[in-house]
Image (cartoon, rainbow, N blue to C red):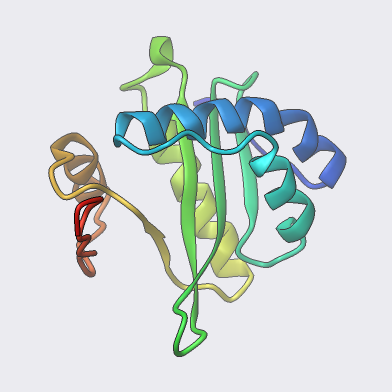
Length: 150
Protein backbone atom coordinates (compact mmCIF):
# COMPACT_ATOMS: atom_id res chain seq x y z
CA UNK A 1 0.00 0.00 0.00
CA UNK A 2 1.08 3.56 -0.66
CA UNK A 3 2.54 5.44 2.30
CA UNK A 4 0.29 8.17 3.70
CA UNK A 5 1.93 11.24 5.15
CA UNK A 6 0.33 13.85 7.35
CA UNK A 7 1.34 17.33 6.31
CA UNK A 8 2.28 18.86 9.64
CA UNK A 9 3.29 22.45 8.90
CA UNK A 10 1.60 25.40 7.26
CA UNK A 11 4.59 25.76 4.94
CA UNK A 12 4.22 22.19 3.68
CA UNK A 13 0.48 22.66 3.29
CA UNK A 14 0.92 25.89 1.34
CA UNK A 15 3.23 24.08 -1.09
CA UNK A 16 0.25 21.90 -1.98
CA UNK A 17 -2.35 24.69 -2.03
CA UNK A 18 -2.27 25.22 -5.83
CA UNK A 19 -2.87 21.52 -6.48
CA UNK A 20 -5.64 21.37 -3.87
CA UNK A 21 -7.29 24.42 -5.41
CA UNK A 22 -7.12 22.76 -8.84
CA UNK A 23 -8.68 19.56 -7.45
CA UNK A 24 -11.40 21.39 -5.55
CA UNK A 25 -12.26 23.56 -8.55
CA UNK A 26 -12.48 20.51 -10.82
CA UNK A 27 -14.77 18.80 -8.31
CA UNK A 28 -16.97 21.88 -8.10
CA UNK A 29 -17.12 21.99 -11.90
CA UNK A 30 -18.19 18.32 -11.96
CA UNK A 31 -20.99 19.30 -9.56
CA UNK A 32 -22.06 22.20 -11.76
CA UNK A 33 -20.78 24.80 -9.31
CA UNK A 34 -18.57 27.83 -9.87
CA UNK A 35 -14.81 27.26 -9.45
CA UNK A 36 -13.14 28.42 -6.27
CA UNK A 37 -11.86 31.96 -6.06
CA UNK A 38 -8.14 32.17 -6.67
CA UNK A 39 -6.29 31.77 -3.39
CA UNK A 40 -9.25 30.25 -1.52
CA UNK A 41 -7.36 27.13 -0.45
CA UNK A 42 -4.36 29.12 0.74
CA UNK A 43 -6.67 31.41 2.71
CA UNK A 44 -8.40 28.37 4.26
CA UNK A 45 -5.10 26.76 5.21
CA UNK A 46 -3.72 29.93 6.76
CA UNK A 47 -6.88 30.44 8.82
CA UNK A 48 -7.62 26.84 9.83
CA UNK A 49 -4.55 24.62 9.66
CA UNK A 50 -4.34 24.59 13.48
CA UNK A 51 -7.97 23.50 14.01
CA UNK A 52 -8.41 19.88 15.17
CA UNK A 53 -10.75 19.10 12.25
CA UNK A 54 -8.15 20.16 9.67
CA UNK A 55 -5.93 17.48 8.20
CA UNK A 56 -3.97 17.34 4.97
CA UNK A 57 -2.89 13.85 3.97
CA UNK A 58 -0.80 12.88 0.97
CA UNK A 59 -0.51 9.37 -0.45
CA UNK A 60 2.81 8.47 -2.02
CA UNK A 61 4.38 11.11 -4.22
CA UNK A 62 1.12 13.11 -4.38
CA UNK A 63 -0.73 10.12 -5.89
CA UNK A 64 -3.63 11.08 -3.66
CA UNK A 65 -4.65 13.97 -1.44
CA UNK A 66 -7.26 14.35 1.29
CA UNK A 67 -8.14 17.62 3.02
CA UNK A 68 -10.55 17.74 5.94
CA UNK A 69 -11.86 20.72 7.85
CA UNK A 70 -14.55 21.94 10.21
CA UNK A 71 -18.15 22.18 9.10
CA UNK A 72 -20.32 24.14 11.52
CA UNK A 73 -24.06 23.99 12.13
CA UNK A 74 -24.96 27.68 12.21
CA UNK A 75 -27.58 27.70 14.98
CA UNK A 76 -26.14 25.22 17.46
CA UNK A 77 -22.50 25.93 16.62
CA UNK A 78 -21.89 22.19 16.61
CA UNK A 79 -18.77 21.40 14.60
CA UNK A 80 -18.17 18.39 12.42
CA UNK A 81 -15.16 17.25 10.47
CA UNK A 82 -15.81 17.03 6.75
CA UNK A 83 -13.88 15.86 3.70
CA UNK A 84 -13.28 19.07 1.77
CA UNK A 85 -11.17 17.58 -1.01
CA UNK A 86 -10.33 13.99 -1.94
CA UNK A 87 -8.44 13.16 -5.09
CA UNK A 88 -6.55 10.19 -6.47
CA UNK A 89 -4.56 10.36 -9.69
CA UNK A 90 -6.73 8.68 -12.36
CA UNK A 91 -3.94 6.21 -13.17
CA UNK A 92 -3.97 5.02 -9.54
CA UNK A 93 -7.70 4.74 -8.95
CA UNK A 94 -9.41 1.51 -7.85
CA UNK A 95 -6.38 0.47 -5.82
CA UNK A 96 -7.59 1.50 -2.37
CA UNK A 97 -5.76 4.83 -2.20
CA UNK A 98 -8.86 6.94 -1.45
CA UNK A 99 -10.07 4.41 1.09
CA UNK A 100 -6.66 4.42 2.81
CA UNK A 101 -6.57 8.23 2.90
CA UNK A 102 -10.04 8.48 4.42
CA UNK A 103 -9.40 5.64 6.89
CA UNK A 104 -6.23 7.39 8.07
CA UNK A 105 -8.14 10.68 8.39
CA UNK A 106 -10.79 8.97 10.54
CA UNK A 107 -8.09 7.43 12.72
CA UNK A 108 -6.27 10.74 13.24
CA UNK A 109 -9.47 12.66 13.90
CA UNK A 110 -10.52 10.11 16.53
CA UNK A 111 -7.14 10.56 18.22
CA UNK A 112 -8.08 14.26 18.39
CA UNK A 113 -11.45 13.42 19.98
CA UNK A 114 -13.48 13.90 16.80
CA UNK A 115 -15.65 10.83 16.34
CA UNK A 116 -17.28 11.55 12.97
CA UNK A 117 -16.09 12.52 9.51
CA UNK A 118 -18.66 13.54 6.93
CA UNK A 119 -18.57 14.21 3.22
CA UNK A 120 -20.83 16.12 0.88
CA UNK A 121 -22.11 13.96 -1.95
CA UNK A 122 -24.65 14.98 -4.56
CA UNK A 123 -27.89 13.01 -4.28
CA UNK A 124 -27.46 11.42 -7.71
CA UNK A 125 -23.73 10.71 -7.53
CA UNK A 126 -24.17 6.95 -7.40
CA UNK A 127 -20.43 6.24 -7.70
CA UNK A 128 -19.46 8.30 -4.64
CA UNK A 129 -22.47 7.16 -2.64
CA UNK A 130 -21.66 3.53 -3.43
CA UNK A 131 -18.00 4.08 -2.51
CA UNK A 132 -18.97 5.53 0.88
CA UNK A 133 -21.42 2.73 1.56
CA UNK A 134 -18.75 0.11 0.73
CA UNK A 135 -16.60 1.80 3.38
CA UNK A 136 -19.39 1.43 5.94
CA UNK A 137 -20.56 5.05 5.81
CA UNK A 138 -24.26 5.84 6.05
CA UNK A 139 -26.38 8.65 4.70
CA UNK A 140 -26.96 11.00 7.62
CA UNK A 141 -29.06 13.79 6.12
CA UNK A 142 -30.03 15.44 2.89
CA UNK A 143 -29.55 19.07 1.87
CA UNK A 144 -32.40 20.72 0.01
CA UNK A 145 -31.57 23.49 -2.48
CA UNK A 146 -33.98 25.88 -4.19
CA UNK A 147 -31.62 26.33 -7.13
CA UNK A 148 -30.80 29.56 -8.93
CA UNK A 149 -34.45 30.23 -9.86
CA UNK A 150 -35.77 29.65 -6.30
